[in-house]
Image 1 (cartoon, helix red, strand yellow):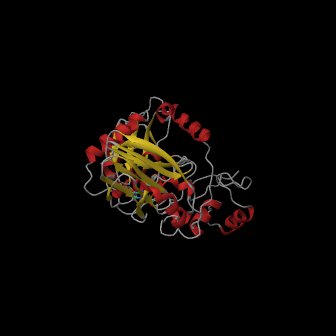
Image 2 (cartoon, protein in one colour; image 1 turned 120 degrees about the vertical axis):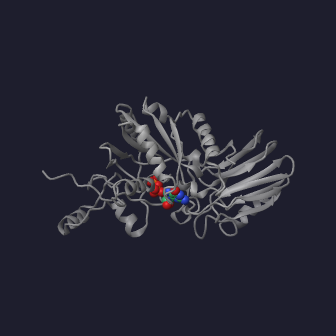
Image 3 (tube, helix red, strand yellow; image 1 turned 135 degrees about the vertical axis):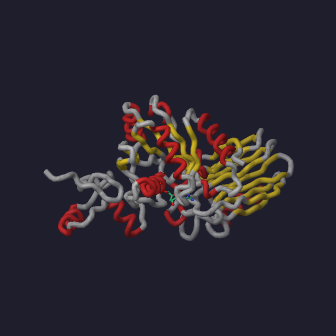
Length: 368
Ligand code: GDP
């Protein structure tokens, strides 16, 4: 018997029978690949590489939880990667329970998107509060940018210390930058390059990938879990770039009177219903058109201009109706449109946030 064949993109075992499962490769492509002796890609990775096209793959929650429970049975350090720009969308409920007594090291990734003046200590305290509220008690928190390689060496030092001879499992929901981070770690530690596929599209990392660490232990990548409440799942690939910002976010501030509305493209709407005239700050990708209008005209305005003046979405993508969520703000808070961004709201305001059905809109302690 020969070695099982693996996709060199995602590591999944090559199979020719289930088109919707990991590692699927059409028989003809497999035969061609074997005949030419070349590297094999599964169909998903092939399409991604050559056409930049996503093939959605379902990693069911229970499958992922089974995988997490396996971690509970081993002595491990769990490195939990969080997108600092989408903390709520990065939460894995029950993570603490599923990893048992194993320590969790939380990594806030994508700090390159934050205003350059952000204070790491304050940010870590804030992130710790968010995680505690979600039932997580990380032993340490590190802030990095996988993309710009900021503080990745610091993270590695912290991982080595916390691992204390254990294997290291890296977990995270899709799109938090887990693959990008692991690629950086590989470059930093042993000089191997890009063994893992990365892409903008959710759901593109599959199967366990093991990377030998210098100390003889293993760093194990796990599949990204799909978070249905993320905005990314409700967008066409062409518009995804707006919710996966690549450049530092420029906060945009507005003095609003009650009775005024801000649109965040045609994906988010913020109504200031009651309160004192005050300043509100929008954190979203710089390409998201923020438009101020009167609350009383806002619904008509949306109907007329969504997809045109109000972008994203752009062009021929269908505009989705927005669902309303109302909040009374008692402390300075962020009104979060999960995966799109947030509006910082001063205390004492009655506000409403709107997003496409299925996308979470929620209130949290202000980040800044
Ligand atoms: P995964 O699904 O968690 O493995 O995420 P990927 O590594 O594929 O990254 C998802 C998206 O986030 C890609 O568009 C990356 O370019 C982007 N990304 C990853 N890390 C960073 C980072 O540190 N900063 C920024 N700005 N973008 C990042």
